[in-house]
Length: 235
Ligand SMILES: CC(C)(COP(=O)(O)OP(=O)(O)OC[C@H]1O[C@@H](n2cnc3c(N)ncnc32)[C@H](O)[C@@H]1OP(=O)(O)O)[C@@H](O)C(=O)NCCC(=O)NCCS
Image 1 (cartoon, rainbow, N blue to C red):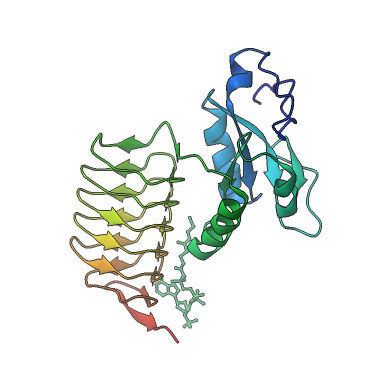
Image 2: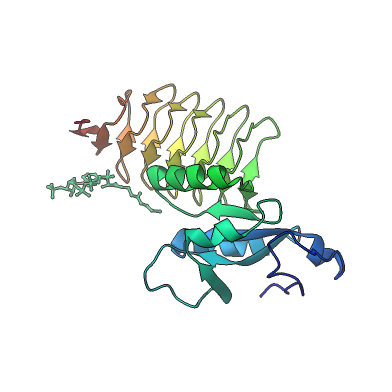
């Protein structure tokens, strides 16, 4: 478990001690959520000395006292008592819509969120990253790919060259996105799915787990299967 700073609970910005060695100058982080994604992000954060996880918040009427050995500090209202300059908050939600709701709340309170890249992920130097992007273990992001703000790239995803993602996109574990694919805001791609090169996935579309998508998917549409067929359309 990571060592704790003596002043780790002081997140109000008042009387911040600068004593305590290098670990106490680390950026303090709170994870919002206590599910599987929060669990994986905890281990990712622990692998970087420049971040210092102080605990979790969760909107649960009966929250656990601890998660992964760290305190559960409260629900989202707890953030209102904190200085947004003293801590950043990680919105640990798989689904794009849930993550976006969290980020809207965080922005209203003035909180920033870190970009979290697992050490075992490989990103081409020409990749452009948005704010708050999360890239989990063994993901590969190739040349000239563009990420949007708060995208989540799960374990083992492969993004080929010139892929472009809008904000709040989720690619679940092992998804393969071939060259020049464009994925618009809030779309989600199921685990192990493959997207053929140059196709476009519309905003808030959903691709089923294991699907092979060979043509464009309209906004808000759910597709699944091999080859992927439309399962539902918006409205
Ligand atoms: C595409 C998806 C979002 C649709 O969710 P949904 O609208 O709730 O639909 P359901 O899961 O109820 O499935 C509806 C039907 O499609 C079928 N179906 C679901 N996913 C399918 C897939 N990938 N391929 C083929 N058929 C599928 C179901 O069997 C069901 O069939 P039925 O109506 O004959 O019983 C969801 O199935 C999915 O694949 N999500 C991805 C989740 C993921 O990848 N998680 C990984 C975490 S790392």
